[in-house]
Length: 79
Image 1: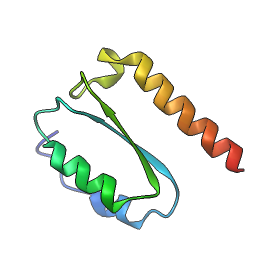
Image 2: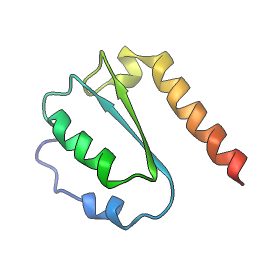
Image 3: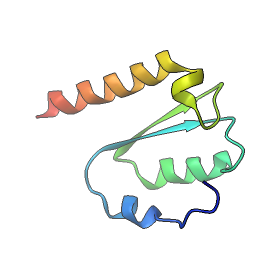
Image 4: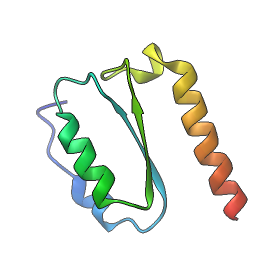
């Protein structure tokens, strides 16, 4: 993961809503990077998982399900 080419420019070009899900205990990317993304992309919803690092869907599955389901519900109600 840490050796990947940075492609954040793809997100910068998006004008549609999206969702960021960050794990506060992720060691490879500092939380400050997530905070910058959160502030730079106000059309994205940001969810912070308190107990997770990289595998939030394993460590906090209920929070992940709720975050994704509520985001999808909001998006479908806009249509």
